[in-house]
Each structure stands twice: as structure tokens, then as C-alpha cells.
Amino acid sequence: MNLSIYKDYNDLSEHAAETIIALVSRTPDAVLCLASGDTPLLTYQLVVRKAIKNGIDFSQCTFVGLDEWVGVPPTNEGSCHYFFYHHLFQPLRISNGQIHLFDALSPDLAQECRKMEKIIYAKNGIDLMLVGIGMNGHIGFNEPGVSPNRYAHVVELDEITRAVGQKYFPQPVVLSRGITLGLQSFLEAKCAVLLASGVKKASVIRQTVEDEISPALPASIIRNHSNGHMMLDEAAASALTGKGTSQAI
Ligand code: F6R
Image (cartoon, rainbow, N blue to C red):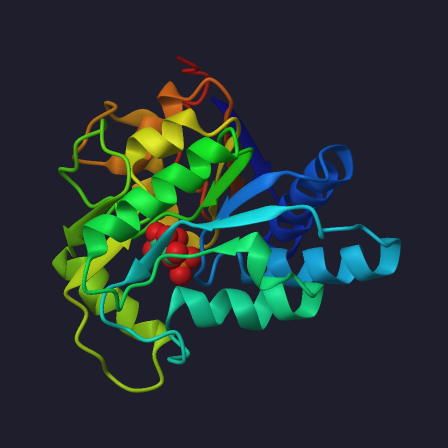
């Protein structure tokens, strides 16, 4: 695993955006699987700005969803669906045929999981999976205790995720389940990038980097990824002791 530490959120976002732009410039038909949330927001804004300024063509890319709140409609501002249309798909003029998100209102969520796995398989896998990290160490909605062998699945959300997740919503909402790609999907992505920013993530980042790799801390699986990159700002890296940082496995 490769660990990079950037000065602040702006610098981190700049480098993360460059990673996406470089991939799409090199591989115009790249398959991208991206997290929503506060951490990557500036990254996506910079991607849009750079793509427009430099004429980077996203028209051949495929976007596959990482996760979604079960039961939350796409029109709700707090949904991952809304986030991506608003911050990335509409500004980049991504066509609907390029977009494959979970339908979290589907009466058959198991079928939604199979749908997503089939798409990923048909596209020869995910080129870049970019994730954030939850306060409990989740990636996507892979909550503590999840099996590392899982592909797409439906989960009961952890208490912390239910509480922290309220920040995305204009009105309080009941969050009980999520639908998500699994840790096996993460491990099979050709490149995996985890972004973390801010001192509030410092403790969970220290555990992710320095404690044992364990399902109790799902993000720690990134250390088993053959092409895994953690990109942190100095605040998120501030609790690292140096103990595990060169622990590429
Ligand atoms: C969202 C997702 C989540 C977030 C994580 C961090 O699609 O997959 O795992 O990445 O909860 O969220 P922020 O970036 O808001 O701190």
C-alpha cells in the first residue's frame, strides 16, 4: 500500500482530481466507482473544472455505484444518486447509458446486487475505486464485522453510520439499511484509492494504517490491495506514529 500525505484538503483534492483526470486521459473507457460524501466533494469539483478547461473526454467512461441508502429516493439531496448527478454527471454531461447506480427503492435488492456485479464483470472490472472512510472504519457501506469475501450486498447500518449520515440530509431521515459493493469488489478493483481529510479522521486512520488488518476495521483491507493508495491530508495523518506506514503487504 502506498501512503501519501498532503498539506491540506485543497492539496489532497487537487492530487485526487489529477489521479482521476490522468486515468481518463490514459484510458478513455475507464470504469470508475466513486464514493459520495464530504471528503471527495472538492475532488469532483476540480475534476469538472479540469475536464472542461483541458477538454478531457468522459464520454466513453462507465460509472458504477459504490453504495446507496436503502429506501431513500434519488430526488432526496442526501442520496448518493443526487450527489453524483449534481456534482459530476450533469456538469460533465455524462449520458444515462454510462451510469449504473443501485436502485435503492427496488423491491428486489438482491437483484440490484446481481445487476451491479454483472455490469462490473461485463466491463472487465473496475479501473478505479475511490472511497472515503467512515468514523467507524467503513468503506462504502462495509460496516465493522463484514466478511472480506463479499461482493455487492445489503447491510444493516451501524449506529455510527446512521447518526453521522444525517449530515447529508436537509431533514432528519430514518437510515437503517444500505446497499453496497463489498470488500471483495474493492480488492478486485485494478486501483483502489482511499481519501481522508481532517483531524476527526485521525484516530480511525491511525487504526487503519497501524493496527491489525481486520474485518473489525473494514478500511484496513486496503493494505491487502496490490495497488492500494491512501491519500491523506496532514490533519487526517496527524495521529500516525510511523509504526505501520511502510507496512506494504
Ligand atoms: C459514501 C460512502 C461512505 C463515505 C464515508 C465517509 O458513498 O461510501 O463510506 O465515504 O462515510 O464520508 P465523508 O467523506 O462524508 O466523511
